[in-house]
Length: 237
Image (cartoon, rainbow, N blue to C red; front, side):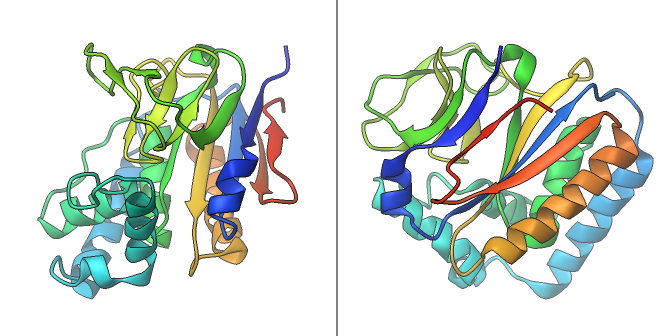
C-alpha cells in the first residue's frame, strides 16, 4: 500500500518560506557499530563550542526563526525549544551526544553541521500517511521513551499519521511508537528549513544525510525537497 508524506496548505499559508527535505530509506541495516559516526559527532560538537556560546544562541538567525515559529502557534521557546536549539544547547553545556544508532546519529550530525532540525520515523510502525499540519486539539501522543499519554493543544504544529501524533510542536519531541531502533529497516527522515535557511541549505543537508546513510546503513535511498509547489511525496522507493 502506498504511503505519503504531505504538508497541509494551512502550513504553507502560515510558513510560505518552509522547505522540507525528505529522505526515504528502505532495506537498511541500523545495527552496525559506527565509531566513525560517533567521532564525527564529537568533531561537530567541538566546532560548535568554538564558534558559539549559550548566551547569544537565541539571537542567531537560524535559531531565532524557529523561536518565532513556535511563538506563532503558542509554544514558549524557553520551555519548548526546537530540536536544533536543543542539540546546540546540550553541546554548549558540554554534553557529548551519546551514540544511539546509525540513523539517529546521522540525522543528529546533519542537524549540527547545517543548523537545521532533522528527525524521522520508522515506517513499519507508521499507520497510513504522515501529515504536517496544525492540531485540532486533543490528538493523542506518547513521548519518546515513555508510556504516558498526552494530548496536542489546538493550533500547535504536529506531524501525525492515521493513528495519532508522531511529533509535537513541530520538531520539539518525537513519539515512542515510531522511534528508530537497531531493528529498524525502513525510515522516512526530514530536514526542515525556515528563512534565512532555504532550498540550497536543505539540498546540501540532504546530500550529506544520504551519504551518511549509504555509508553506515546501506539500503535503497531516495530524496525530495517539498515546497508549496510540491507539497507531498510518496514514501515508496
